[in-house]
Image 1 (cartoon, rainbow, N blue to C red):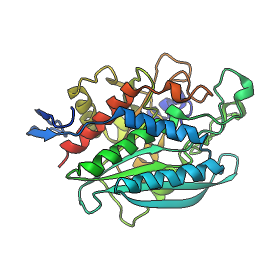
Image 2 (image 1 turned 90 degrees about the horizontal axis):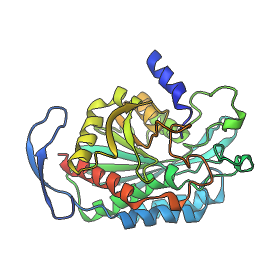
Image 3 (image 1 turned 135 degrees about the horizontal axis):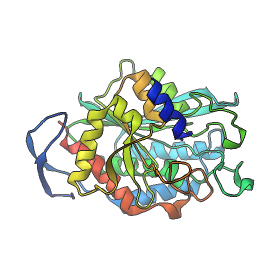
Length: 331
């Protein structure tokens, strides 16, 4: 996604391995109980293969044939790993009044568990490489390896692991559609509000189950680039600071301090914003931000260079292992 982060910064002002034993103080909002927890291992090779598979389909732009092909594959993979799957179908209106087909995919693991958390990522591809250095590419869809496929790949690997190691809590994996169809940079006079995250907006106002609720949510976005920096995103700190601290503590306990930085960054109008605002589920965004870049994101963001060669298994491992630790430390 992700519109100009400086605009939203101003808006915000206005308003260890498998079989190992891990001991620590669990900082879940001042909880100090010492736990002895076995956390399964996240397989970064498997996660990378899931990312590569999505990219091999081609761009998964809403309304394209590859949207349907990828949708069916995601559903089959979640089912293969034992998840109970629901596909929420909707029609949503884009910034230019185009009506787009939208498929939010929800896979529930350990569906009978009362205590649950939500993990999510968007699976669609942006139809415009509008930040590419070559203007001729601005109307082309991006490969969307990092901006989309990386988070989905991590969550598919999480689903595989949880299919073999049932957690004590329930985990609902959401793949949001039509997240990245916002107005192209070349067309903008001013940013149109709420034109991104259309799938998560729809679900947040129309949940797939009446009365659906979870303890909290974690969104992944752009989680596969080399040396990624995950700052504490502004809306996450506004809506769910305790969850942010919990996840960052787990990352630091694993030695991932250089990735998960204890420094706040600009708020990003991403899927988690709508889950917080409309569904009232405290949700954070693990998203790669770069304070030294022109866009505020990684160099290949919204360009034709956002391809599989930019995906780093080490970063997939960092994020995936952090999520597994978070899951297995919950009760």
